[in-house]
Length: 407
Ligand code: ATP
Ligand code: MG
Image (cartoon, rainbow, N blue to C red; front, side, top):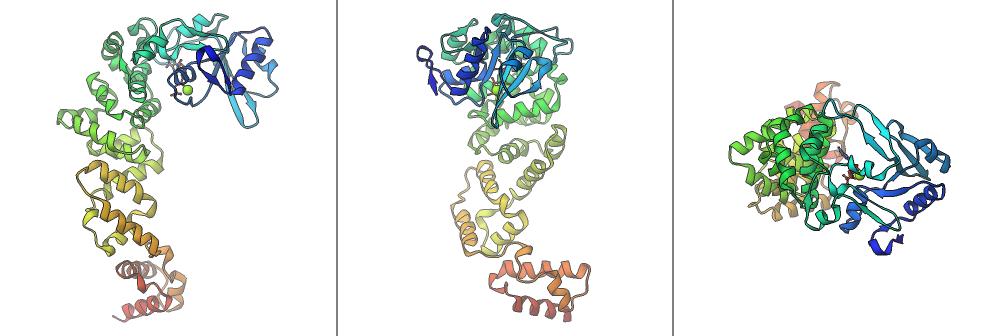
């Protein structure tokens, strides 16, 4: 890591190296956007984006291994082993006719032009080892904890409505307020979020929920965004449940399925919303399972009941389930239930049909007719084992299976 000294931004060695190589070839190059913002905040940047006056072909001539990741938009990824760094040519975005994609992009040799197209002042700073380029007061807004559009907010949101949701998301991630003029424009143009794809809305909502300040989802309602992208949440607000939801949201750990189950708990139509927002099947399955098993009175379960829950819900669901129940019913004392759950895990009790001491094949050999009867018998044996783990021996289970048949 090389420290830039005056700026107090520590760039990874690789990033300094890339910038130096580009400069040595006669180009300008800077780290830009989120990485500069996060460094200045003392947060670890997720990735380091580089912006340069070099055209993509010029960049490609400098580095030995590159991938054309977004060549149309001027982005080339320089590869170092498995690690890649995105290097994007300074660009200006053309007219936005549809409120979500520029009709064209044009390259420019001016850093100022490139910074101007960026959404918020805090995202529009660039730095190299010598200087911080901050043309729109980004450092001051960082200081004052403000999200503010670069340029005229209405125009910027008019170009790309996703920026409205990004403003709320950054507010939640950073704990910043949104500047009044930016806030007004967001409110005015919120209806244009109807043009934005479900995938992008999902991605932003996800970052909002997983942030340090998920209670800022209140802004979605204040700005009239909820009724456009999540009408079911507006109903939650109308029922006066929004404050409660925000509190609970903040109390839930940052686990995807738990956060979404919390959000959707109040809407009553989780499945529909998740399909609309293009969730993957695994997450849909897990969130629905949390909502279903979240009704279980876990604090009242005896050992057999807890083993039954573990079997029905599946072991992978148990930790998120405790988190979800804790977040959705904050008054409930779960210490006893968790201790019981752990003691069952430690004892190694069977809570899965696949871990019974006999399988379907064993049952058929013992005379249970192939087909439905095998499954039914295994279910019956599992029930017996959940009630009393000591039954899980081959001898006892076969005996139980055969006695049952003679009944
Ligand atoms: P994150 O930590 O979420 O990655 P980020 O600031 O890096 O935050 P990205 O979406 O990775 O956000 O975008 C990188 C940079 O590109 C931003 O900092 C901003 O300068 C610019 N940018 C991204 N999306 C937009 C947009 N919709 N409109 C204008 N500028 C944008
Ligand atoms: Mg980024």
